[in-house]
View (tube, rainbow, N blue to C red):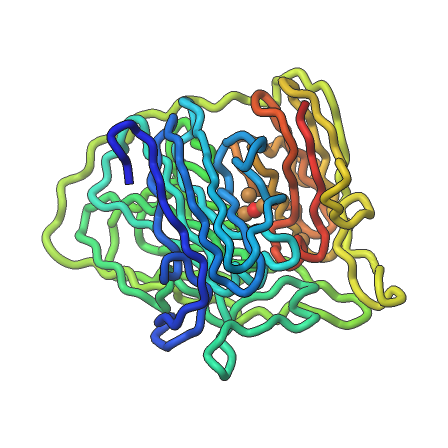
Length: 434
Ligand code: C2O
Ligand code: CU
Ligand code: CU
């Protein structure tokens, strides 16, 4: 992908194709004929050109989730519409200090996002480490879910599923159902995990092995944190070190209770059924010598001690609206998304404090484009460590307080619930930095 002058160019062709998913032939939505689409590997300072060719029958577009790129021009832009049959050229310029990590891309055409992601349109972006982290093996795990109907097409969501957020019956890793990963004893592996599910939270465990979290989203801990499980809301990513200290194990997704939509139509979540095994981790072969120490990572700026210039409150609710009050209407501050309205105007160069209040009985994962956030309080309690994230969870009937440094890039973009059915239903606002 890299040319000699450091500029990269890639074509992504969005099209419905017959592919093998979970061992069966599915008419999925694909980028370049695959699910997931190709992985884009970048470095800080790179300029990336993406030519999106939309061969779908519906409009689409492209969003680079989590990348810190300008919202001006067409850089981080969900306001662009690429009609079926058309092409569009995007250009992204990563700043020289862009954080390393795992990011991803997906369509963002309002009203069709959940259907297109559920259908198969997503891929990973890796921004390489400036100083390599010693690992004997790198794995990229793009985790997604899908339900296939009797005709072999991605299933349409029922009204109740749109309310609570659809969860697919099949949970796939890189398009495969229950793959086997083989490792040698003593190895240190690097797992980059993307939660590309439309609505499903992933509470992941790999018992018997040592797990240490290097970071989440664009954030890094100063030193990797030992963990026994990780929870990824839709859109979140994990950068995980797995040291092979045990034997064969299952990578499992444990049940995560994200509440129920309730409401007059009785739209509860019907989880696919508690714990499930996503992959088999097989340990075989000769023992590998321990990998070299992980270099210390820069300590992130701590916004808890920053001077705050503005405070805002965003209230997430699922109040009744539409159809004479019979439908649930996901809103932020009582309003549904309007691309022509600017909901929040922020001052470039400032640090803001946003109190996120969830009045509903379902969790909502808030995603802000362009500028990462730090959670400083959860349920009114201060956190003990801060990390840069672009999706933060707001648990049902609770609050999460974040701080955001609008330190660079002016322009207009969005924040929204990353349960993509909620986003499509209007749980999204517009922010402009000037
Ligand atoms: Cu991953 Cu605005 O989205
Ligand atoms: Cu995004
Ligand atoms: Cu939501």
